[in-house]
Length: 136
Image (cartoon, rainbow, N blue to C red; front, side, top):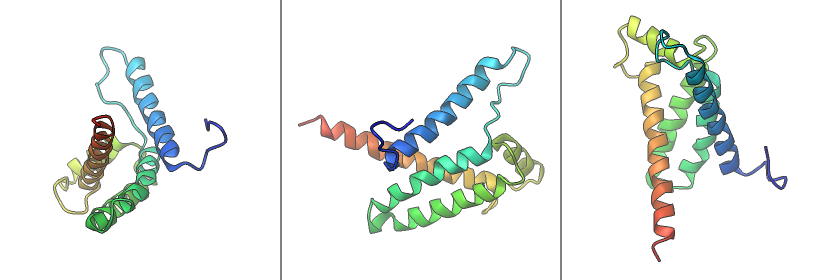
């Protein structure tokens, strides 16, 4: 879905990956019947891949964010490894709940939470950049 042959643009790759995830969520939500659980089955591998595309953005934030970058990359790598045996994020969470290790450092679910927080931080930074661009 590259425009003008610019398929090497990191922001475009990130956008396309997360649009793909959003479409999966939307399509799964629309196909559920009222008696089904309200849990959308999002595959772990595409999610971890999309998150891995965000990693270079941390490097652009300078040395102050180096620890956040290292931590984020490690957590995304863990999710990628988990995707080999745990096909969906919900299955991954369910397994950690069953093993009573959701709150333990290094659990897949805790790593998922840390990745989510990293994504939220990047989102807020971009929102602030956009907001200040139009304030002039």
